[in-house]
Length: 354
Ligand SMILES: [Zn+2]
Image (tube, rainbow, N blue to C red; front, top):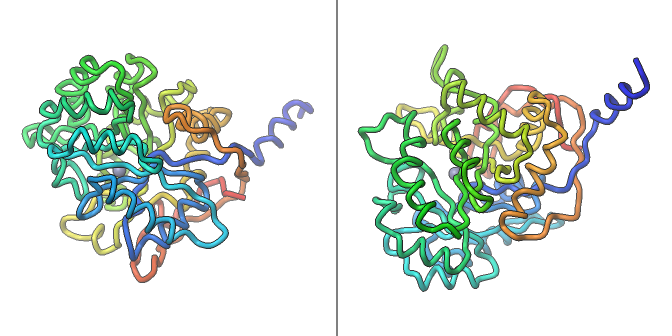
């Protein structure tokens, strides 16, 4: 072995990067918060915290209350900053959006098409009927985060992301060119192409499960409820499109786990909930897939640079270190009395957080 080759090999035995942020996470609420906040804060300095509680976080006042509960749940000695998000409804006022933009703890609003996913019943029925709110977001320069799926029952569940882009997103994007928008947890080559066709103020987050799995991992050889999430896993060609785009180091794509814990009994049942609980090993999952794609050198930018640059926040100054040390995902975790099956439970991945 040449010295250059051995140097590369020894370099990749460990990887020290700027401490990352999670730009899409579900921390839920008490009594789960002490567990979920600690699990995310163990890796991530900040996180965009999804507002789909029951009832949802629809006002600045509710967002501030949620912020305080998260901060109170943070274990002593850990550092973590929750970045709050308002849940957009047809009744949201432009004044509330202006107040959110001025509030130091609120960083975005989230559009859920009504009924698209967990606790989204209060969401927007018609994304084309709230242009006055997009105008307010654009005017106040507050990012719009989207669960980009149509809810039309006539549209096949595997096509709902593509149809959302065609039916709504292209029009919204064109009418509000200065609006910063994030298409969350993208799952298709169509979404990749949409983002790539747009200016830099259009971004997307990508989850570990959509990079590592396709719908065979959900449906072939038996239903795997712990791989069930929304948007649903797609066919392999779409997975390949996501895996390809992370190798390009394009600043419009960044880390968002969509880690979304449910109790075991709510996942393993006749009508199971959508969501993968990936937070405890999230960065190691991303390291695994970036290495598989030959893109480990781009992990830091994806995890730690592109997100804060888009949100116009400073990059973190601390670092974290990943080591090539296999870790086996626990079969279950006890979150203060709630039994949760973590995503990839029982599986082993090659990287660990030092
Ligand atoms: Zn989500």
